[in-house]
Image 1 (cartoon, one colour):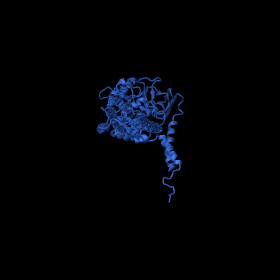
Image 2 (cartoon, helix red, strand yellow):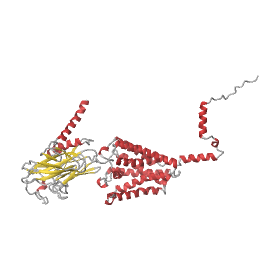
Image 3 (cartoon, rainbow, N blue to C red):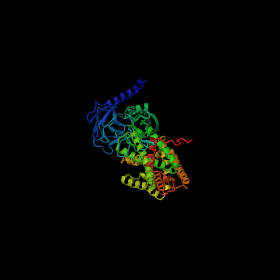
Image 4 (cartoon, rainbow, N blue to C red):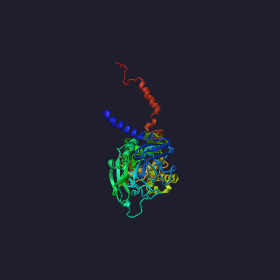
Length: 564
């Protein structure tokens, strides 16, 4: 059985080795030669430009598309050595289309990495004849004449793809048919949208590079993909699909000319509906058991705090201190270290426990209610500020400036503790209801995808990554979000009202145990009528106990002989 289990893994590794080795012989340091229709691996050094050449192009070829696929890093594909707007494309699935001149037999492109890190990916050059449709041949945006790429955008719930309109094919060197003519020949073109699903939970680079080759041409797409939609003349060339974070999907669009029975392929794109660069909700942290356990425990404790937090004041302080310390420490450790996610979460839990104990001990020893309630108010202020920036207000261009964002966020953050100085008990109860109920939503979000978790997650992302802005991650509400938002409001209002009703005749806050002990000790010293006043001090009592253990006890009964 073990042998059988190892065979698929060995075959998978061998297949990936073939992919990575293919084309190595044809590549020098900064130059690689492609053959038509043959996949090749290309290694692009950091801060370098790789020249891509293809020669021996047949005369019957009218145009050529070049597609280049990487796993997670963007790469720039350009007609010129220095990329310019309209002559280059930057993406993880980059593609360009080149028309052939009458006597042309070779083409040259240029590859550049998006950052200084080297990358490796797979590319292929596909030739098309004069009768084949031209994908993106009627693109009129951004100064790009031909755009054979599929433009993809995803949210936590929805993935949207868009393509530029195609044109009918034409011979090499001929003038293209007009795209503006009403009822022109391009109106007969049809577009078939295909999906190709990778194995669930498979986020490996080798798997993507192997499967992308199966759907890199029109024949492979129709054989292995699943057709999900067809566009005809007059339709908007946009399609939306449900997002499943962590599920790899390759989207392809085949444009067909029913009159000539020809077809061409737009450059396929892939998506996992998650980010590999995010340290908070990245692809590598989805569905982890450690995440579910952590937030489930925090959510259950938050539910108790929501309804009974102020009654059990020490439990409230411990839970609030845990959340406060865990949030701060997670941001610090994520920004300054490269530790594994599970290790970071474990250290965060440990530091959260320490923070909770310290907050309880500070109240037990010092008895400062305003200090402890101020820390509790910071959590409510953080949630209020995050809620403001979760609305369309956060998308305003003025808040893309870090200075404006921090100033506004800090002002709202400090407003809640200042209000608590006037009404400390009511502020403590409101904080228990609002923050405790939101922790329940965070626990639910580990099992059900909801955008409400991004209310605080977007702020943490911006603290961890200074280049992050809310406009880079679209969040769309759906029915489950409105249901959970209603549940949040009901829990918050219900928990607050219940605690205000139960605590209306009780003292505002329980007294500090340490201060009570000191007062009791002073009372015993001054009250001579108190029996405890005559009790020996604690060191004397302990000494007496120890001496009693080693001394021989004298008999209590009378042993003197009686006189007769």
